[in-house]
Length: 80
Image (tube, rainbow, N blue to C red; front, side, top):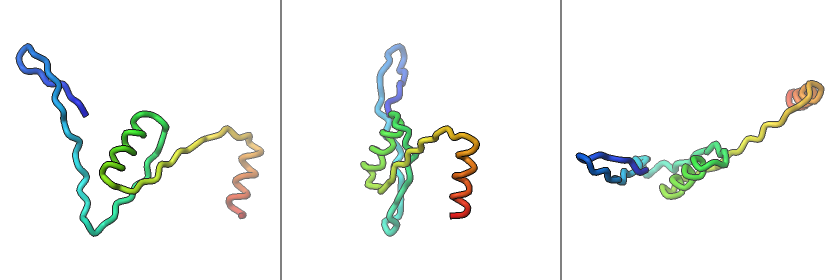
């Protein structure tokens, strides 16, 4: 992450390191990433890769259903 800092009248750019996630060595970290396909999701995945954390990106696609189809699907889910 790059932040701007002012020193008098001169503007300079300072590289600010991201905080490191500390996990005990005995625990294997895993994560779910809600993946929108945007830049923030991609950068989150890259940071997790760099920190050697196993993750699964999850993408949800919501579809529009008719009332009749919604009832049928809910019956299938509940009744099996």
